[in-house]
Image (cartoon, rainbow, N blue to C red; front, side, top):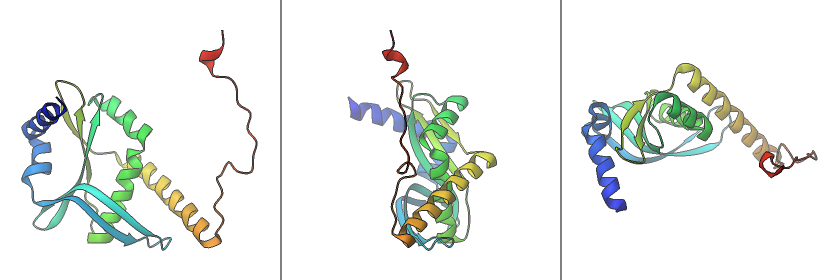
Length: 171
């Protein structure tokens, strides 16, 4: 049953004009793994892209496939924020820029998990990407500081917090 669902999802992606070109018709590499040294922190970083689509040997798009409960724009945007996909996009774009000297667009191919397995393609706005870039830069700086000082503490390690009972527990 699972194999049938996956085959139907693939068929729906093949029927989508943009998703099909990016995932199946354009030259490029799938499951592309690579490393680079972050210029700002000196950290050795790694990434594994779902796909780097190319045109004339140059990067056309970083493609990432996501299954989702809804491919509606507002719903997928909320999922991007909730799951940190904006950070993923910023991080992968950094890596591809270090690898190729170019920064291609990052395209999500969103596929609904349940019938009719709707498909939509999205990029993130500059504002959304900038938020991801700031969060990635902050995380890398914090990681480099931990590495350089050999102090590995949680930001919450020097405080005691008070918890309330969950709202649902109150009768």
